[in-house]
Length: 192
Image (tube, rainbow, N blue to C red; front, top):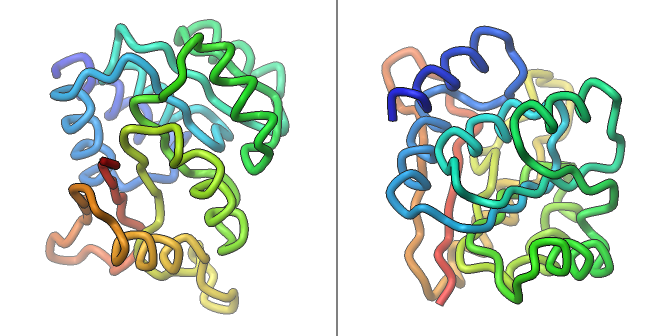
């Protein structure tokens, strides 16, 4: 886990991930122990979280699904050793293409961290959960992305609904340390 901790520290220092360090570290440890062979991340943006997933799962095939792939993101993917797929994570054709790309019928872990609206997170859940052993969610606590004038992100609403109906193990990684605000959080549902 030393390499993982170094990558987490680097990612947090450079600000290329919108995760809380305690929470992403807990997810990395969870994945380190389980050693998934295939990972899909819906929403890559700057690839900070993807770099942490790669460090935690060095042998996994990782595909990041992103609509807008910049030359910088392509360079990060090549340097980090994950595959970028340009597409809409809410589209069943994207899921089918990614399954073919990975040459699998089932994905070990999918991390939903794209558009955080209720409709988008729900669409990702509906599209990806049937072919996943476990699904992770970012922003499982209600918050507005730092702007109190905005409507809270919808990901927490999907999380609460899915968690209530889950038949598998449910995990929540939440920074509840003194002084931490009551936002973000990462949730994982292991599907049966």
